[in-house]
Image 1: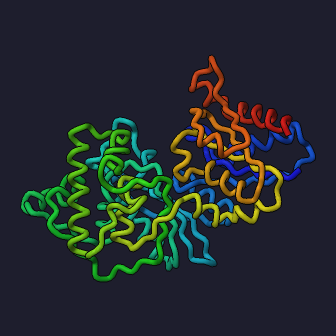
Image 2: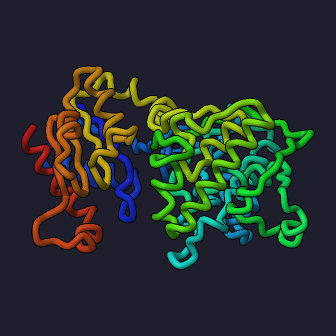
Image 3: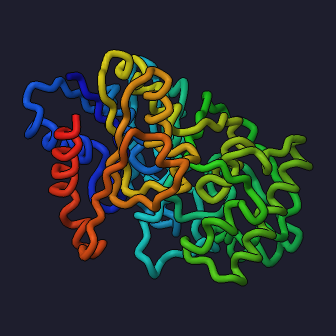
Length: 373
């Protein structure tokens, strides 16, 4: 029996590689002769660079950059020299993981460090960049990144602005009057890998949907929405294109919009980008069983998340496909994707305990799944 294991991470507990290895251990306990191939996956969220680099053999490069609040950091990204391909994640410089909970502040947090990473890869002669847009601490529409790339932002009340030129806030964009392109910016092809389809603005946009979890108060949400609206208006006026309504424009606090507007990037579903890079389709053709998983299976799973992508590909080739999840909310459409869903959550076990024992529980569920085969 040939089995392909292609899960995403269990956020906060195990990365995709660890999830896959623990599932494999459980299967082998019951099916010692099974041929098992492990393909750790991602969908544009955190872990995207690792998934591609594990499969393709990247070197890891470091560059100086700044975190969301402007502190100097060392940021790393993957590099495939033969292709001059840079594989990076915006969260490496501008992610939630760079801040403590009390430091979360989407009014001050910017994507400046992402721009610095892009410039570093460009200076090394990159022909193409893949940038995963997950785990952001920012809500700046790519404004910080654009500043790092040399775009100049002018404001209506310039004298007030001059005092704090080095500490521009996202809410300053409310008074934005014009944007000047840098003369000598030369960027390669950029693919922005996204795991959400949100537009930049509105009830389903970057600010309203994701702003609260980044620490924005109700008043700040209103000002941030006005700021990004103004940014989109000025971009449309100055550059004669408008990406605000494009699916994925709202990814990573509007960085999707910023990458399209300032870098000419193409937005693609992250699952497709990773699946191509790791050659998932060719690996799936010759197996009997496919197993995927993620920390949570719910309605959001249907919007381009790894388990849904793996399941649809498996169905295309007529393969049986199973999911193992930390928790599953019973969504019927999600249920229909799989032959069966196994859930780690146990009645009487706290979420904290479950997270602590995730590896052990994964092995147990994999054993149960193996017995059903």
